[in-house]
Image (cartoon, rainbow, N blue to C red):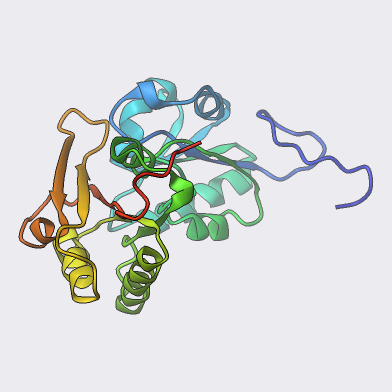
Length: 247
């Protein structure tokens, strides 16, 4: 950055350059517009193109009305990102990439940044399921580690599981975002096999903030023998840390 050059972090178009703008917008944990921030609303209103999955579109349908929509599904999600970027490069329109929860947590951020690497990218953070699960468990995030298993690669999964064990042994609480390749039952089995006590307290939080939210207060041994729904956060509370205040 040259002397005197100012980084524009606000909303709206910046006439000092010709890059199209891409907002990566966290819309909250999903389902209800009440978790939208004013900053997220402003970013969506400023945008001409909306790139969204079904879950990320539901809370903002009114805000997205009349805008060009690129709807993502499992079979075409990357292609739709590329198409939206190509259009915006041609038209100069502003894009809003909608993400459930916080876009900096388990939302393929690196991939989106690569697709829109020649844009003026502005990330709009929000709260996600992990923060809500931590609140229900009454733990401090700065006394915990957060791992997402949304990347289904086996080598990554093994590395993250080992990281969870090492972090617990250092006195940290654990938060694990699940998916179909690593469900809570599997994570609990690994943790038990690597030295965590069967009576270790766990909260399994399903579909946080949604109408069918469920929170189960159980032990690690009970998690090993139970199937939970895929959209869940597993919170493993470290008994050596539960009395520490969150300040």
